[in-house]
Length: 460
Image 1 (cartoon, rainbow, N blue to C red):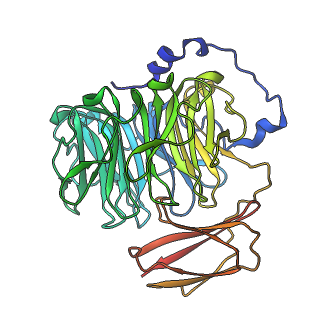
Image 2 (cartoon, rainbow, N blue to C red; image 1 turned 60 degrees about the vertical axis):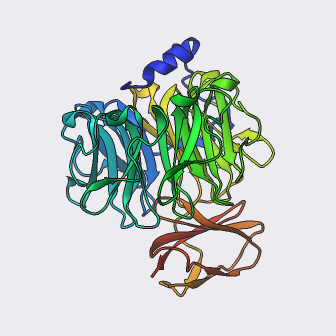
């Protein structure tokens, strides 16, 4: 399967041609606002992958139909969306694009490479050009559903995918500085898979979630324990078929969470977590109002799970919901985009503000990014209100601010946005032990109900 667009037509035929309102009808609709121009890409943008650069700029990678379906990366410079390096930098067609940043801040993109028999290729931008990371087309065979991220332990890029060279099963590879090598056995899942997604636990273990065709297409999660890939809880733990799977770890307790379209609950959105013994629902299963596609999961700095999706109940527009500890609630209005969407991808800015990227039906299927401006008057600012010392440090740091409205949450995240430490604070001065973190650059963020303060630290 090369494109997912047809799934929306199958699942939500009543909404594809629904008339779209040209103007917003309520001030509350404006809580979600465009980041730069809507439809900023040159042409149609498929397989959108969205995250923030280490300097805090929103970035998207996509298959660029305006440039022969090759890979393009763009970033928002505060005023405009600009291209990172050349547009259409891949040799051929690039599908299943996945974007991530190295510890040193270089953007890496993994994709299914049409110029190399649809095998896996990874490229990075070195500040001047896009260059190959290892060999192009390094996988054993054709791949789908690429997921790229960096290990917090060895800082190397890892990639997970459906491996056509190994009967469509799951394979994970890492770049060792010279070659791409298998992590454990290639094709380690029991049967073929779809919707592979890769993430690292706070302790540095790689986890992979996928739709498991060996277990009635339900969700399965496996982790690499240093020697073998082992199941995390029961295989096929979802109520029914699980599609559009998204995996992330709670910053509060390090538990893995999986969001997905839940066929066992009328193809609505569900979120489950592994509590150390079993997989359990987070709130109600099937919590969305209707059918969803392209579910994408991210955690706020305070540890609340947010799920973005194309909302079949609302003309396939973008909707974001969060779990507040008791219920699933909309973040702003449901269906906040002006038109229908595809390839929804959610991420939090360094200041803790949710952003959503998507393919925008109302703008010739080009890329659009929107952010949520909270009605409570939260101020997002990159000007740090924090004093941190010593910085750099190898073990303990002191974080000091003039005022701390309570309650406030302090968090430490790495350059990829993964939150590694979180705690509630009530005093203007806090000492934090970061000796267990690998050497590198991190963000410290203090979030209250009105303000966000952020600063960079260096762990030696």
